[in-house]
Length: 241
Image (cartoon, rainbow, N blue to C red):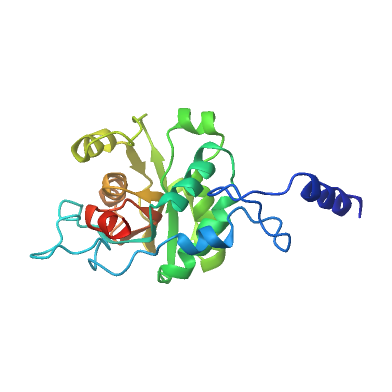
């Protein structure tokens, strides 16, 4: 009872504000971190390329996933990386708002088709960055998504074996070079399940491709990936503008 009273007092004195717009959340849902208005502004990624989900070019096959390893056969993202999604990811990664993993996973589960019997494997952080941050945001998303999908999560399948630069300011070519041979995977068991890599954002797919290559090298043959957000292609930015 005392704990409940303290929680109620904390909610009264320090009400939550939406991480995207800073408005106070509704009294009926005091633990929310994203308000209904900002939730409604987050745009789902529509159907595109059957393999990578990217919007198809006007002419010819998809070029976005052309150079990915063959083992990475399907990638899905829930939403475009608009202002609201960017704010959610920023607060999850850099501000310690780990409860946003649940919010993000709910949106992913509502949009992305359930993969069936599978194993969720979060993209790992390098040891130094993990110590600095104190947690891996991809692992938090994977755990929340695993609970919703009732799918097993195993962070131990994949490890980042060398430090890499932040991908934020790199060109597509630099991104690929930055994460090349950055991962090591445990060998696949004889009766393996489909592996679903989990990450927060897809920009060029370089990180997912490097992780899939590491898995493929030790016998994992059925590899997909899911992310919460996806960087906006130029055509979508024009549409949003």
